[in-house]
Length: 348
Image 1 (cartoon, rainbow, N blue to C red):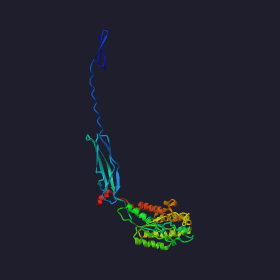
Image 2: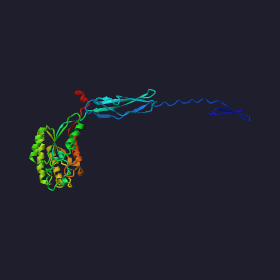
Image 3: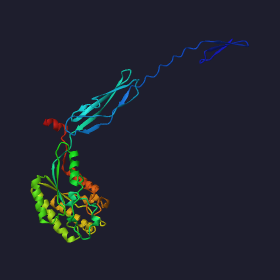
Image 4: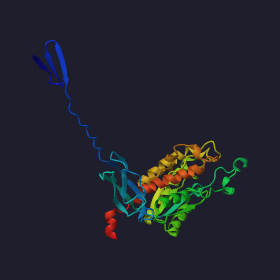
């Protein structure tokens, strides 16, 4: 009798003469593998939060939610301090934790920075100039009906109250420096010439009256109104006297170029060619006298759509641009860094 067995089978084969008999055997039971263990939870925190306290005091801060992955549901998340809590000045750390049904945890953290409001090194400003500083409306509907050659200064002035550049500037500064009282005096006089000695005298007198810390000078448009280049020199001399008078009294001078004129307007057709010549001298004057240059003309970039129909006075959008140009220079040169958290704690 011959017997042949296969190692991988559960059957033995017996060969007896010509008869093949198959005898079966039971296979061993294969155990069911256990389910895979779920990964523990993971958590991602929101981005860091930086907020300015308008009052310089602790403030409520709200932040975004955390995100979780993996873990056995339900996965709960808690953050300390919670969103909407009152945070102190400086940097605080928020820690968030995720816990799943098997009490496995994961955590992350992020900073919440509550800053002191910005501060500025001067709060009293004197805006000195002519009818542009005054805010005169060059879209006066009576202009077209006036006879040619008539002096427009003899007619009543229409002013865009609330839209003059000193008013807009004061509002912008007050919104940024919330813990300080900002004052911008509009000391404009319609029809004024920078070359007139009485202009310098008026400026000096106002420096004392307003107790200004900063003088914002934008004069010279009337000097070149008729397109006569020879009037530029006397205008620059007058501006130089005002800059020097301000510095002598420890008032910081900011000297502005004047806006462009539109030759298609009644008041701009003569002076528009002399404005660039005047502004070149104003830029040089600011450099030689150490005044802070406010390049209003450059900000206009030749856009006469910002000039009223008379060709000389800016419209409301033009006044807003002048205010922004002064604002940007003031922030860049006078803003002081808020105290660090460490310095704040040491001073308490």
